[in-house]
Length: 526
Image (cartoon, rainbow, N blue to C red):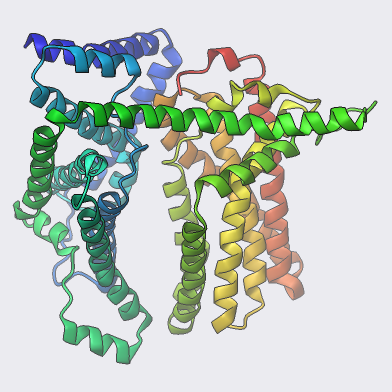
């Protein structure tokens, strides 16, 4: 028990300090209470008994959705097993902790088991607080409380299995490493086949569907259907995987302290290189201006802010390999081509999904990603130059905006390759306005709730609600414009909506600049 107390001392102290800081901020406490009340309220509404019970086999759309959820979890497991993202999890939280554990008298097996369990618990805690609302909203009405609990247990077990292989994969050496890579890639490819089959079924490609029917591909989403019937067997496989990975890591890592320490140092060194690279563009720019001896007597809003866009593009080229860039570009092209085929098969449903379901899904997914602005605000680079804080925040926001815009361009190209419809260009304009609005909503919510823990909880819900609320004025403006100018309805409505969304985005950037001015020293930990 004493050994466990020593092991968990730093984690327990960090948790206590976080709770004390939360207690000193009544506003943060109120936001967390509201967040929990909303989640509990939706859970009660979704599990309330219904007078009408639906019977029969689930629809093709329900089967495809369940397959997407279970296959997505399986693909994530294969991805972690194949790539070994060593920098995604902290093995030792600091050099001091690593030295303490290595030089202590505790059993190495106990230390390794604790590190593995801590990694799994952190993953579960982060996923539960960040994705709770997304999961509850996705549960259909009429779900029983028992089924809801079983599905939560299943997703927790799946997350445990995914997190449990990160540490064993990081320590893999020799023949074990290529074996894990091959196994992970195989698992991801096999899990993607049911998704491809469901997509082809929905598109109604008869010849291909007949071939897939002969292959008798299983439906992974049947696990969720079995849980709704009270079957506990789908929970067993991920739990077994997590237990085997944890036991294997505990046995292997008892003699691998130097390797764990090296991984910890590599993680810290990687972060230091990122920080140093952020400063290089500004240093080069300042050196060039000094050599040219050019001075401006006027302050302009863009002076110095373009360095953030340049730095972001430079960082992206260094962090993302050309192979991954080509892969995402290919997926965007394939996605656009798939949308073109889907529009031929279901033209009315296509526009409903494009204008309603897809934006809502994008808001729900992007809201779960926290805004990582605090590290940039603490860098001296961020405050050099004559640009206003609003201009700097706009440039920082555009740093992530341009990558999404490029992916949309590839999707439009893929759509136009099969469906020569000029309205795809109009959709691109609307997508740009939508992206600008949703990204600046995240910036404004960060200005209100900058703490990293709040970004994983109440900020997720606030960002979702604010995005839907601010999406209403552009939609209304587009409808009114289409009524006034019926002869130019699609283009005029899209332009009006995009202009209103851009105006709201500019207002949100101004609000974030006003809120953050003079408050950088009070930002929470990153």
